[in-house]
Length: 165
Image 1: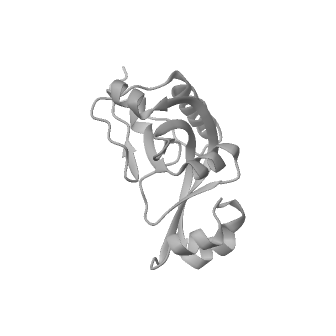
Image 2: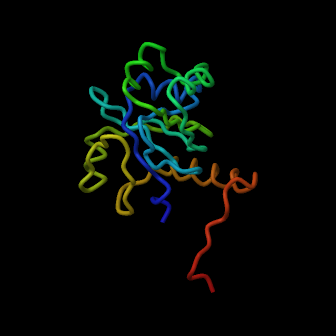
């Protein structure tokens, strides 16, 4: 049930660390990748690490012209200008998802993920977590606590059950 609010995002270790420590407050992409307010985004660190050891709760996503995104948010993007310019070369818009809250979780290696999550393939960008895949207790606690906070703030509506009596 809760798996529909969980995504895995492919990311380099340095940027995962910056998200977890709080210096990177916006996750940048060249296109919208479907992260929604209140989603738990697991940070799948690419090779050579190949593991999940952190995550964040997605806040709102914005789209701005590339130069405007840098001017307005460079101090919280968690990337250097040279990298930013190369990454967004030939792009008209930059997409950024604000990070509501970040977490460090017990690490889970790619081998463990394969053992616990049938047919898991490391994401190219993002993937939706499947209902039959393993979910750490810490992930659920983070997800539930953050979604409850967002509901209390009036930013996230309660999910209605069509089958409630």
